[in-house]
Image (tube, rainbow, N blue to C red; front, top):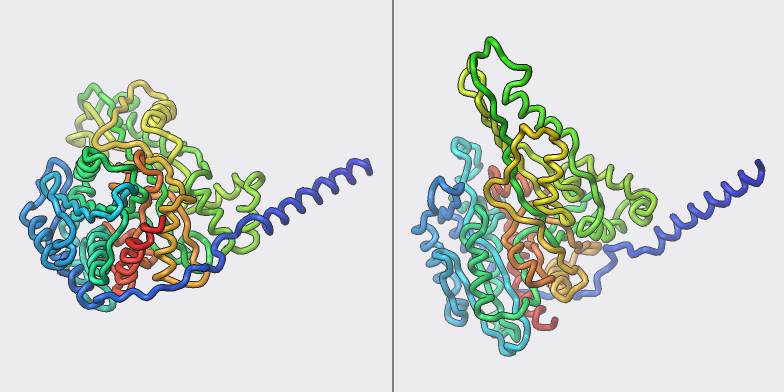
Length: 491
């Protein structure tokens, strides 16, 4: 017995030693930057005014099949950009693609080099009718007040379009000429599926461009570390984005009078299917961009969390369960299930002939639309519930290489204009969708990032009430783009 206890004690000692050594040995992330800050001159007042003016054009994308876009508003925005950025429009070639999208070509001096594609979108989501009065300032007013620019597009995504063009205008003013060709690709319908982004990509591929050295779109931002459970500030650079699938569940009933109902009406049977789906969510998996993010962030966490993240061979399930307690972090580890629409019945005393529900899934990398559909059918386990895909759908995008030169150029550019000690720049999984997904199969340096500091409530404001961007934050984004245009030449 004594020998067994001694052996057990020795085993425990070895395990503890491994845990401690791994925690000390593995890269901590967030180490001091060796990148020197760079001063970038910006016409601050003018840049702020130009974004505010762009917000005033109501370039709204309404739900497909309801209202067409207001082409007059889009073309007025095009004209605003032409007048706002004279050097860009003198030196770059501007084309209209897919009716209302814009493509700018800045020809590089060395056309043998792979190009760069900088993306953004001109459209915005509508304001929910009846909520206009909840806005501090009118949603299309472009008001500059209290240290912010207010209105639709200040976060999603006129901010990226204007910041990129401001960066180009500033670089041209300083006499810069890129070696790599740079394309600015601004779609007009990202909020309803992004067919224009696909058209922009198709146009460039038709011209025979090489796989881009960097594709950069909206997605992540500079966030307070508390958002992801660490100290300091974190720059979240999206290396992949989840897929999108909506499945309609439908049940056919026999109808009739409610006084003589069956054991389960069509609505009841549908409700059982929904309950089963919500009771058995997709499994948690800590890998890919989510794992890469946690590995970079662990250095700024308390010792217990750092030890767990440095020894996932033992604590992986515990870490995953801990992350699952918050919806935002849980969404990075699993395919999410959200019942978003339900319809059935016409009158209180009439049995429903049919009932339908739409369930939206955001698919994590490693799964597909096909695997999600099969999972849903298995969990529901009722052949009387019809399952079919509806609307826009796409598989998760491939995961880009955060060790590549494109990511390095993004990180360097950010550190040059945002030299905060301890800043952690990390890849992560974008749980929403962007137009960048169209390029992920062409370039493994496709990333999603806006170099502007955001508050923790930015996600609720982006498609919600009181969308706004800080003045200082927007100017950081402008400086970032100007530095990025120069840094991609050194890749």
